[in-house]
Amino acid sequence: MLSGRFFETISRLMPVDALSGKENEIAKLNPDKIYVENVRAVLGVSYASAVRICEMAVRQGLFERGIEVLCPDGSVATSADSEASLPETVTCWKESDGEVEEEKLATASLGRIVFYRLNDRSASFLYRPAAENG
Image (spheres, rainbow, N blue to C red):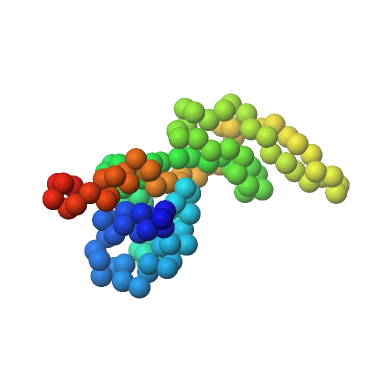
């Protein structure tokens, strides 16, 4: 069900011929963690175009934007809806001499990555008849 809604969302943003044959690839994307690089790869567009597609979906209420904080090893320490919602510190894990140790790090010192998710509230908009969608 989610993959169908996700494909419907993407098809509202792209020309139909650009999506031809890509239904299976789009269905493999996680609708709760949509990364720009995945959109770029699946749709065969530039990184800048993928960002524009995702941001257009946000403006139209189809996607929501989120942000992840990355530990030094690249793993995700935490995620939030906005920078303001991020904690001041996060817990990361590092290996030292064969031992795994917990370390608290300042969120401000760590990398971030923006992600998008399918807006569940947009589902009713997506499935109304075209005349009602305006």
